[in-house]
Image 1: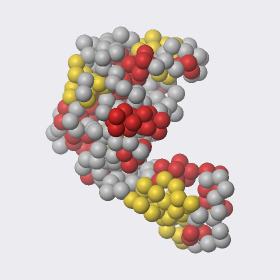
Image 2: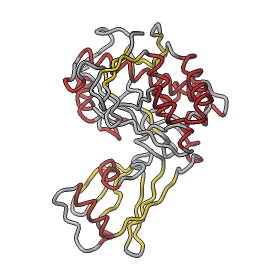
Image 3: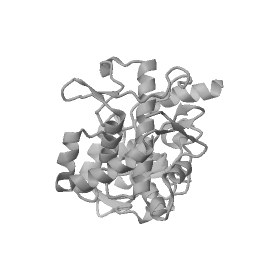
Image 4: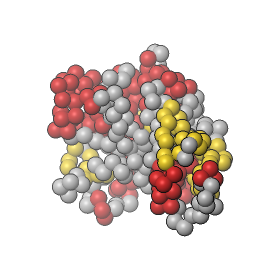
Length: 338
């Protein structure tokens, strides 16, 4: 138990804010794609302290400073609109809705247990650098434009079918981490964030390799590469040989660069990803004509549910329950009474 609590405390420090970043590949009208998930693990269990609820969420609007009272249904629909393309398969949309609901329930319980002053009494905010994406009705209409009726109808219908469901582990809402696409196998929380979580472990997601922009290549010139690395890694010594500035070192079985050589020091793949604005920490580097050529695979931190993987499973006939069971093994579906 002490080891579990230690890991929980450690992970809470590492992933207090793992952003859910909406990105649109298929055009503005087709919806967003989540790059991650906000997550926080308390020191001890939370299930006995605050029961799952159908009460509205309190969402801090960072633009106005007002706390919005958002019904569960409205929030879940708005989160799916922000985080997954609306033209994805219905069962994938349902899985995303359950993950979004689970995320919100966990944050509500945590906010009640350990209030944060910056939230002004809210459960979470609409700041996507800290919490999962959420679109208001007005934003959804603006985002989908002329496709509003079709896309909102698809997402709201999917959400309505699973609105009472959240994912739990040992009677607590899970850290419902998700990402756009893995590199072919999802990553463990331990490799990504430094502490193990029983249900955030590597699973096969090989269909991701067929997703749009699965493999991307960027070229970064000498001066730009030096500037970015020096800005991120204060005091780093790069030397004159550009080919010794950056190289992957230790790589996980899922393909994530765990450590990389950056000049005279060692960094994590996640640090390099942030420094260079890469799509994932699954990357390799080669040098060509004074440029670093960096190839990435997948998009996002790779932990939990792959959205493209979920869509591929749905296309092959899997239900949302099967998708959840695959990406969050050993978890249960619990009814909230919504």
